[in-house]
Image (tube, rainbow, N blue to C red; front, side):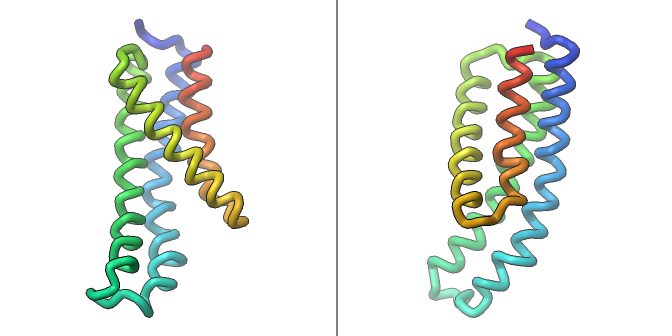
Length: 125
């Protein structure tokens, strides 16, 4: 089933927010995360290396959500595989958003809560 016009707008907004978040997430990594790890970033410090790689992996999630939301805007979020993919990413984003909020870091909560909220709202429109 093809999404309604309002649902498409919500999904394209989620796609745009996801795409923009790739740049924001990368910038936060270079400005905040990586400098705090730089004193520990010896090749033998597996925790620091894993933290840096893990941060960069987060960009992949934003990139994939941008692609999926654009796909869903065109074709709908219809099959169980798409719904499972969304539920998995939404749970991850909300969990991470709560972690940032609890630490008093509020900027990242906008896409972490906003993207799932836009996708869920698209299903109600």
